[in-house]
Image (cartoon, rainbow, N blue to C red; front, side, top):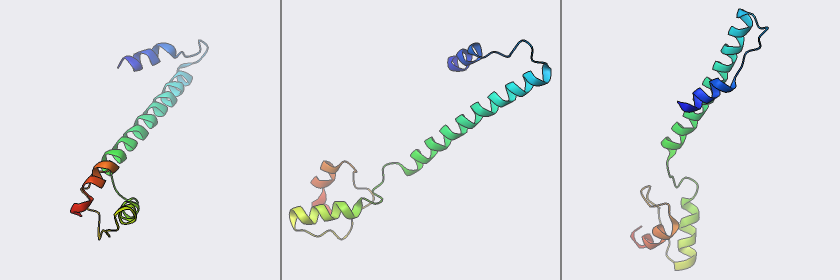
Length: 94
């Protein structure tokens, strides 16, 4: 809330602006701020929805396990930790 108050304090409407111009300035700034808030919310929602995922990395991990241990993985479970050392320590369970 302090950020909005600081922002309001730093904005000014020209002294020679009539009521319509002042309203247009306020509307443009409000729309800009709302767009930024919506964009930030969309990014946060996408990050929360995707979370940590093995998408695109499962085959690489399986290939590394096969190359280093000679053991072929049939699949890397979705619940496998993404931290590579932890996942490697559990590779014998896959």
